[in-house]
Every structure is written in C-alpha cells, then in structure tokens.
Image (cartoon, rainbow, N blue to C red; front, top):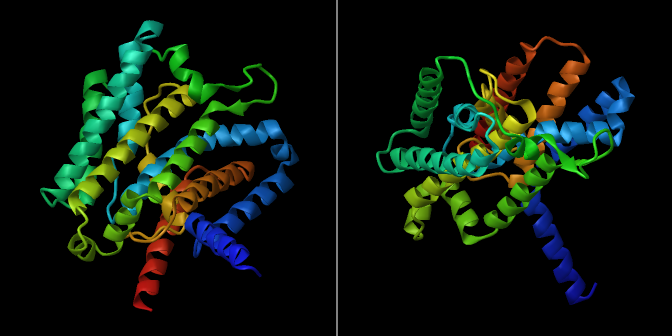
Amino acid sequence: MTLTAETSSVRARRWRDHLLSGGSWTVLALLAVVLVVIVAINPSFAEPVSLMAFAKKAAPLVVLAVGQYLVIVSGEFDLSVGSLVGAQVVIAARLMDGDEALTWPVLGLMLVVGLVVGLVNGLVTTLLRVPSFITTLGMMLVLFGAVRLWTGGAPTGALTDAFRVLGRKGFPDVPGQFQVPYALLVAVVVGVLAVLLMRRPFGRSLVAVGDNAVAAAYSGASVWWLRTRAFVLSSVLATVAAVLIGGFAGVTAQVGQGLEFMAITAVVLGGVALGGGRGTVVAAMVGALTLEALFTLFNQLALPSTVRPAVQGVIIIAAVAYAARRRRT
C-alpha cells in the first residue's frame, strides 16, 4: 500500500468513526432489524411511498434529536423542547389565523422566541449555576402554563397553507404520486450542518466540555458560552421541528407533549453518553429513526399506546446503567 493510499484509508476510517462510533453501530443494526420485521408484517411498508411517509413522520424527531444531542454532549439536559414546540405551534396558529400575509412575520417571531428561550436556559444554567434539569423543567412548566393561560386551554386559530408546506408536502408536488418530503430534506440539511459544526473548533470544544469541563476551561475553552450556545441551538431546532410538526399534524392541545423525553431517548439510544463527552450527531439521528421505527412496529402489532413511555423508560435506564458501567471499567 502506497503512502497516499494509506493516508486516504486513515482519513476514511477517521471520518467513519466521526459519524458512527462505539455502540452506535449496534443501534444501526437494530434499526435494520426493526425495519425488516415491519416489512415482514406489512410488505407494503417497503414501497417507496410508504418509506417516504415514514421519513416525513420521523423528520421532526430527528431535528429535535440533533438539538438535544448538542446539549447532552456538553453535559447538560434540555427538558423544555416539547413545551416549546407546543407553544410555537399554538402561538403561530392564533396569530396567523389563516392569514397568508402573516406567515413570514410569525415565522420570524417564532425564531426570536426560540432564541430567547434557549438563551434564558443557557444563561440560567451556566451563569446562575442552576442545574439544567431544574432550569429546563421550570421553562417547560412556564411555557406549558403560559400558553394554556393565553388560549384558555383550547387552541384557536389556523395555520396558513404556506406555513404547512414544509411539514405536509414534498417534491415533486403532484398529489397521489411518489414525492420526497420537504421535511426529510430539512432533516438532512440540519444533520449535515450539525456534522460540519461538530468538526469545527466549536464542536470539538463542546465535546471536550462534556467530557471534562474543568480540563476544558484550563485549556482556554469558554465553558459557559459553549453550553449557552448549545441551548440556543437546541431551542432553534425545536422551532424548526415545530414548523414541521405544525405542517404535518396541525394544531391540537397535545402538540409537543412528551417530545422532550422522546428526543432524549433517541439520543441515548444512539449511544450518546448521558453526562456528555461521547457520541456523534449521526448516531443521535439514527437513534431517532430507530425509536420512530419501534413505535411503527408497535402500531403494526396493535400494541396499546401505553407501551411507548414504558419502552422509553427502559431505554433511558439501560443507557444510564451502561454508561455508568463503562466509566467504572
């Protein structure tokens, strides 16, 4: 093997390890097994139209998992994303109320709300040194209560057709024919940008902070600012997910409910260590796809919906136990 070929091989291996490492290959295999079982039960699932429908449904969770990954890999948690998604959709519907002219102004307002929520979460956690679990739990309750106080507990208004394009439609826009959902394209773009971001100094420093914040601080990293930016990015991506979910499912009183735990479950299922410092963006995205595939399998088996939170709890407990065991050894 020539030096050039060897160098290319090393680079390819490093790139592969950067995308999926350690136990991440296990969840990729699990995803393949679950999909095979679904196809065995329902062969029509393997048809391109059905696969694209699955991708459209999974895209918001993939986007949320990327945002949650950024926070978790830095050593923190964000429990506010589900309530933020719900608040964003409900607020957008009430402000727009079907008026197409208000689509872009409301989208801009949603982005501002996402930035503010992320900034508050980050600054309270890093500067006031309130544990992120408590900070984001409080934000979750604030958003949940404020929206219900404002709407009287019953969402009103309507989302515009322009707002719902990304979550509902695809390319080519021909009803009844195969199309690539715009939601899938959004998830892919978010994933690619996140992978590139994690290869930059910000991403490497974020992982270092999650692994050992004291050592990272001594090496010159601004720990508080890195973690604050992670919270901001998480809230911005939750806003993107809100646009996709609103477009796909519309406005309901339950929109966004439980999504924070689904996002955390997806990230840890992808092999990202709770406590930070280990895991990749692509692994978190694969974890989200696997979790969505598991829920699809449960639907195929006609299992009760109460099974879903039980499975999420088992996954989180198993991931924490596995991470604790690895750190002891």
